[in-house]
Length: 290
Image (cartoon, rainbow, N blue to C red; front, side, top):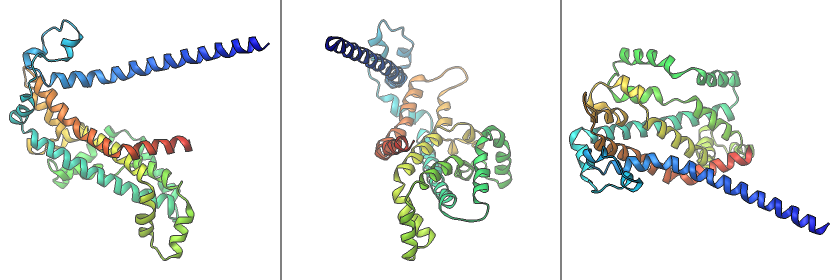
């Protein structure tokens, strides 16, 4: 009997190891498939235009340039007003991110902590706006921008996008998990609603706020359709629109386009590096509570 038990345990252990190896293999294949486009983009940004179209003889030649052309990055700024595109994206990205986090946190605090008539109905009505496709509202909002005279200005790029039902919903759910006793103690000490929000709720919500910050900045940084509609001049174009400037009617400067794409990606990486601690913590909290 003891020998049979040992054999069963050995067979179970072998099966578990095979499953682990299979899982690792799937993860490695997935990781490689995600890294390959980024690697190709980076190496292409260091090639000459002619070298991009040379048929590689092996994998090494495909990804390692025979001659590294770092001048592509400087040339990207000379060929098009890339610095202006970059500055516009930074201004719009930071303003929209700050606006969305501020408005979403205030709305979430009201919907989760304050008591007023029709609160839940108003919240569900606000939440229902998430079901409306963005393409349905884009034309009415554009008409409003024209009436206000905001087309081709920062106002049109920023103000219509600083409100988010998704951000409000996410923060509301997190705020509802915070201990009610802290808020009651603050009220006894004479704190106002806004002071409770500023000194208690927000400091305890750093993981959720960091997550919303990352998602909002990433979404706005890569936004294409709305900036394309409301910008007419190079002075107001953001990076996703500005990268199109490397394409002409008959050709595309792929080496410069890839160099611009690499530089456009850097702020996303920097934002993630600075907020990853809170971002991972938020995922862990969500997983534990889920």
